[in-house]
Image 1 (cartoon, rainbow, N blue to C red):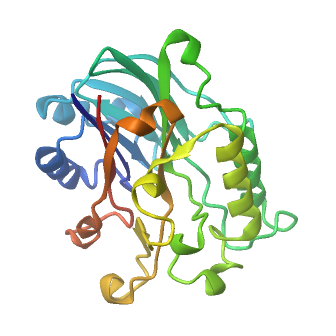
Image 2 (cartoon, rainbow, N blue to C red):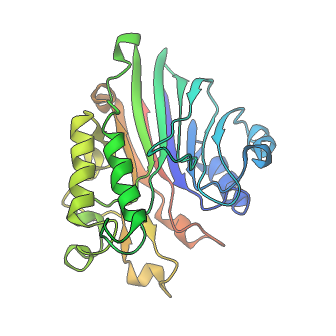
Length: 270
């Protein structure tokens, strides 16, 4: 039985609702996780998603900034919102999805702070916040609910490209926020300590370049191809044998009024 989950930093769900609905119509993931919805809960376009067949929605938003949502065709339960670094920036939501084959999977959806421009926590509070946020995420363990029969998937815009092949130029980006050694090492440590499996790299070899984000600043993003893999899909190890493929919808970056991120979808066969 097929099951799929998509992560997408949409950079304003109301502004880009037509693109999201177009994607749902063509790709039909079972679960869509959005980041940077930039929308308070009472203004979230729930009716449009329900009309499209996605009746189960868990949201955590605020006006103008950040915000995350889980939109599902399958029932959701036990939705939770956690505050990191004692700052409620609506950057996290999780819920248990009733997946095919009587599986229950907790979906963790994250929007990690970008970290500003200067990679020095002593002079840049935004960078310090990012490092502290990742450190607190180390408490998340992929097998935390295994005793209850619940597997785990962690998705989102983690705002870090950990591998050399996750950026267009490892050498030129070593001092650029999102690929500095302290960020990449901390993210890899968090992944290791939590027993998380990087599903994108389980499907696409680490030797192969893969990007999910291209800056708006590029005059011709496709020709320059100066991308980074900032969007991630991880899981508990028990789900890896069921993974069939991972799709990175690069073409979405060229859509009208696009997000600077593209959808990433993990497909499973249970």
